Length: 293
Ligand code: MF3
Ligand code: CO
Ligand code: CO
Image 1 (cartoon, rainbow, N blue to C red):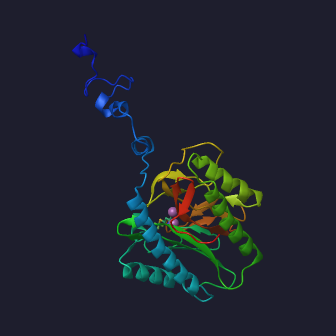
Image 2: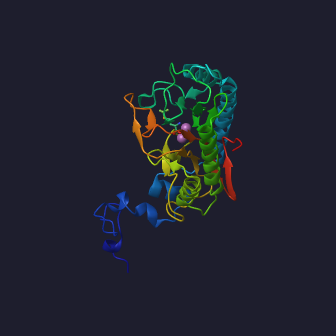
Image 3: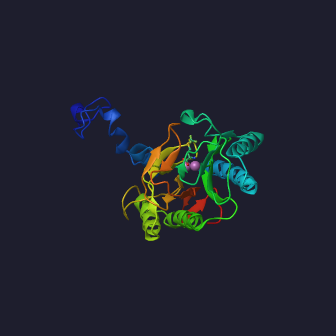
C-alpha cells in the first residue's frame, strides 16, 4: 500500500538534494519535457515557432532593402550621420523601429564603424574618404520581431589591407554559417571561424559575440566566434541566432573610447565584420537576412 509520506509533494524538499522545494526545482522535469521546454529551462533559449520565424524573415527583408539603399550611398565625402538619417527614416517609414536607438543609451539608429573601429561606432560628423572601410550594422524591429545584420563596404578604391580584411571577414561568416545544422554545436561554429581567420593571418575579436535574436535584440545563447569542435550547446531546429565575426588584420586586442561605445583595435589595425540572422532548419540553416558572401 502506498503511504502518504512516500509521495513527493509540491512543497516537499526536492529529492535531488538541492534544498529547494520540489515545485521550485525538479518537479517540471518529472514529466517528459519537449525540446522547447528543455532549451528554455536549461539555457533560457527560446526556440521559435514557424509564425515567429516568418515575422523575423519579414523584418530581415526590410533590413536588406535598407542595407541596399545604404550601399548605394557609400562614397568619399559621405558623412556617417547621413547613413543614420537614411536608416532611421526608411525604418520608420516601413512601420518599424530602429532597435539601436536608446538601446542601453546608444544615441543613434544604426552602428557605423570605420577602419579600426571594430563595432558600435556612433554615426556623426566623420567624413568617409577614399580607401576607408565602413561597417553598417542594422537592426529593425518590425511587428515586434528583430532581425540583425551587418556588412562592411569599401569607400572608393580599397587599399590592399582593406581588401584583405573585408574578404577574410566575409568568408569567416560563411565558414561559421556552413557549420550550422541540427546536431552540430556552438563550438563547431566558433572553431570554423577561428581556424579560417587565424589561418589567413588575421585575429578574431573575443569580447563581442553573436546572439539569439528575434523576440528581443540580444537573447540566449551567446555565439562565440572562436572555440573548440563539439563544445557547447547542441543546435536544434527553430533556434534563431546571429553569427557576426569581427576580424582584425593586426592583433585582437581592443579598447572602448570615452563615448562608452566605440570599440577600436589597440594597434590601430583595420577591423571588418559581417553578420546575418540564421534559423536552424531540419537539414541545415536558412538565413533570414540572406546576402552573398
Ligand atoms: N547590432 C549589434 C549586434 O550585432 C548591437 C548594437 S547595440 C547598439 O549585436 F546599441 F550599439 F546598437
Ligand atoms: Co548582432
Ligand atoms: Co548587429
